[in-house]
Image 1 (spheres, one colour):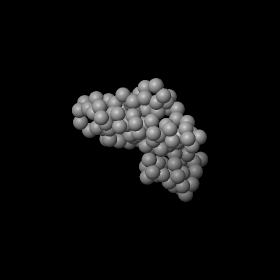
Image 2 (cartoon, helix red, strand yellow):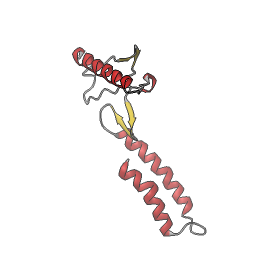
Image 3 (cartoon, helix red, strand yellow):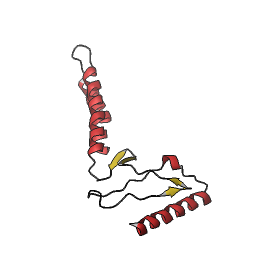
Image 4 (cartoon, helix red, strand yellow):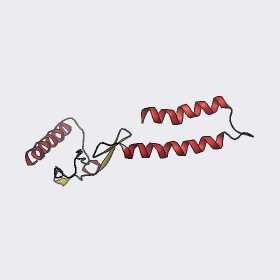
Length: 122
């Protein structure tokens, strides 16, 4: 694991130097490491640094709206998506009141835009 850790640190240093040459900055406080491994404690977590600041190792990270868990199960992403859809369904229930609610076409459009799109695209 030590050689892999040193290769990762070299790659991080190369990325940092490329960013500096091209006018970009990397914020160490917004950076984290996820050690993807399906087996329990097979490898120790890597100790990586950006400008002498340690990069924290986390169990899950959100990237482009998808939550990646270290064991690649996606259960936390599905749980988060379910909570969002349940909140939106409750809003849709309020809008669908029979005495004063929206018509069926409007409700279907809201469902497709707010709920179905989240299920399809995460």
